[in-house]
Figure 1 (cartoon, rainbow over the protein chains, first blue to last red):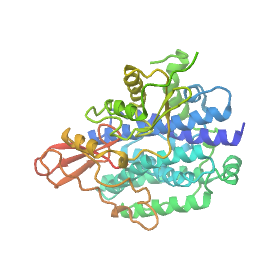
Figure 2: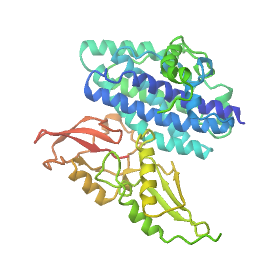
Figure 3: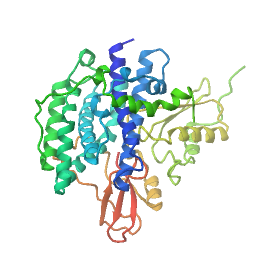
Figure 4: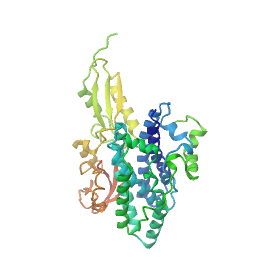
Length: 251
Length: 176
């Protein structure tokens, strides 16, 4: 088994899984009907992508774990998502700031993965990027509307950007797993990815009349290695309850 | 036991599949939607292999579509059948037939107007706000004066629009 590739695939799958779960919790609670539908549409896209990543991870691992077992029967320390996606939904500015940062990185990462030396990964990226393009257009639009909106929405949007900024460095802090993937031609290098991320974020924040925090600010990390915030435990408790209480339950 | 050659051709299978409706938009068939990518019949074994592709990766209709395809072909006497799901090349609205687009419009869903979604539209100096929502004609009154209400509609493949003349809201099948 290529344990680096297994880990890398878990990271992709877990990012989509946890964000999808968090967005699903907003179902029926969106600030407007259109937003409610958009949140759940994005959650559904991410869940579909989760399935593609985790089923491939299970095949690479070769121990007979399918995507359901990987999603529902791993505990917090085994999850590989970045800390950004486990941040609370908060107010709508926080939900959208988290989404905008994630979508921007996700978009540029998939653009890189489309050229992956692993054709299966390239295929998943090719499928996902069309969906992510819509995600990013929407979250960018909303950051602009809220940032360049009323005095209150501007203040809340700026606070959310500042609050979440510390979680936007982990994706570009490559460890041995990421580095092995770059060397195999599977994943894109961090530097160009980070430059594209910062440039798009700067463009949108400027249009939104928001201040961009310093790219050199202190950045939290650890999620990719399984060191998570307490919050992830609560997310998993709800998400995994059914399979833990009734193992093997099906629709 | 000798295997009898199948009594049907791929062309016939395509015709049969053209009678399988999409579960969420029943006025359009899975063939018109571009979900069926290939039909092959293995000469030696007589096995019919149908290749399908998801519209969106999270499309909840995919399993139902596979079941509907199987049921339809079994009803036409296809014994040995295998349904394969393929991701790449990724599904695009360019694969939707003209007949399918006309059927969507008649059903009250504006069909996709552009070519495949431009994924490069956010980089390389293309300013984000230069990307305009596509101009979509109202499927009810035909007016070109419409506005995008939301990028996301009742299913992932649709956006929400409203007509500024007849005031009706409507679904737009997004380019993908």
